[in-house]
Image (tube, rainbow, N blue to C red; front, side, top):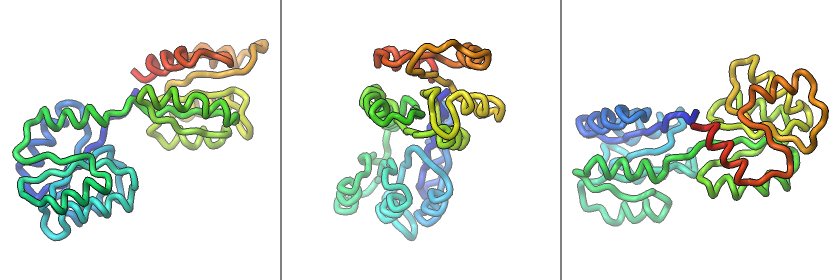
Length: 240
């Protein structure tokens, strides 16, 4: 299943930050708070957040300076600036450098929820296949459907990536170098690290007893070539 979105609120107005956190946590989001830019940057270096709500006027390092530090740590950091003041030049700098937008205090909760809906991921799909043409051919299909795709070119890399977490669905070719798809699947099962898995094969061999077992346990089984729409439907079912 897709993991909860992790949200970071950086605001020295503790009452506002805690009120916002209560609303978001009640809707299933994971929320952390920081009361200054320096504290925010230190915590951001330690934790992978999906979205940051950043007050512009902070004690010490201001919100825009903090935003630039966040981008040094994570170049694709998603940050929504918040302000109750007129600081157009600072905000223009943040927007020019990739901030998601501006929320003017006081703002309504639906405004926050609209931002979350806009960035909400469908899930992260790991495609484990040593055929770069195949991986590239389905990347557009997967990304257009709202999923983030990452690629592993061999079984050892696939095992490492899934074991590290944050993978919502695994599209696993059986014929992988270093570790076969079958070995990857069974090792993940043994380690308790299994995620919804779609087995992919380029042919229809006589199935061994182990492969029959894997096929029964996997979330889907596809034979190349297959209709991309079929792949998406299986991914959707697997990540619900």
